[in-house]
Image 1: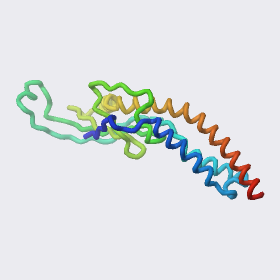
Image 2 (image 1 turned 90 degrees about the vertical axis):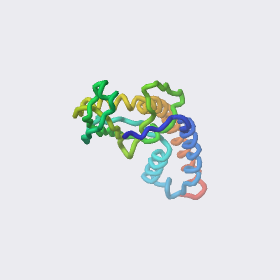
Image 3 (image 1 turned 120 degrees about the vertical axis):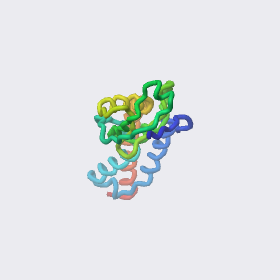
Image 4 (image 1 turned 180 degrees about the vertical axis):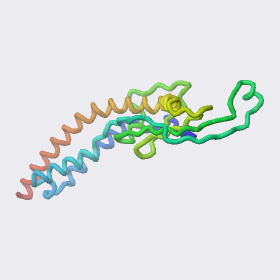
Length: 193
């Protein structure tokens, strides 16, 4: 079934952003003249450094029930009295996304609310989050709805971290552009054109 991760003990998003900011100076100070002399090389270097430093907000795709498995289970006397079914369908629901996976696994700077319905975070595997939903009938749409409820905390992390990343990226991108221009000038002046 689902592999839940407790948010307790996860690193904070502010720490990831600080780590990325520290890398800026190191990447720029290690540039060589050949990486910045020609405009095309400078553009490629700028793009490479921004890809390394900046975080890309997560955009969720359309969730889809991609598989199911039928099981028949034995019921205890109390389960039978409660009217539970022996028949179970375990639905596999995929939530594809684009963006940086880290968005899901860092505690938002503004904190988060944890309700009794939240089991924990369901972290991505590659470019998708897989959620397993156990229902007494084959019901792909019902499985998608139930899976969205199970992802409540995970999506809360995504939404809060996305907002934080967007604001942070604007300032950091300007800093990168400024430092790269300065480094380009310095290298051209010191090593010639």
